[in-house]
Image 1 (cartoon, rainbow, N blue to C red):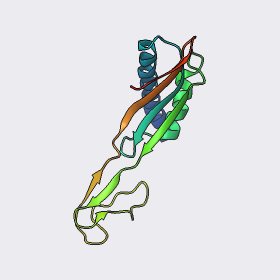
Image 2: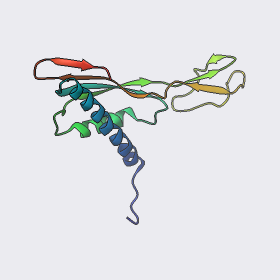
Image 3: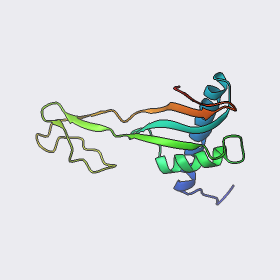
Length: 137
């Protein structure tokens, strides 16, 4: 459409919406594999480097489950930070959130990044007609 531009927020929400729909599918499959029922909560682990905004993912989750069997189910995001490490000095805590250093501020050696790349469904809780259940995916 000529002249139409989406905002960055819209692009981000579209990304998180796709993730929320896939998380819902994974959680539903897990619940169905254990007899079915309504989802109560889903715990996902999201790393600093996973290119996911937790607030947008939670908003998208609400939209993904709206009007269905799982409406009201909670999405719980467990955040995992990435760390920068210097081979000589160890952990580099001086990094401002959202920024990355190429060189150690103490010795100027190149830095390595560890962790923070997680994106996984960790736990699915659901209730069947008889009793609440919990499954680890």
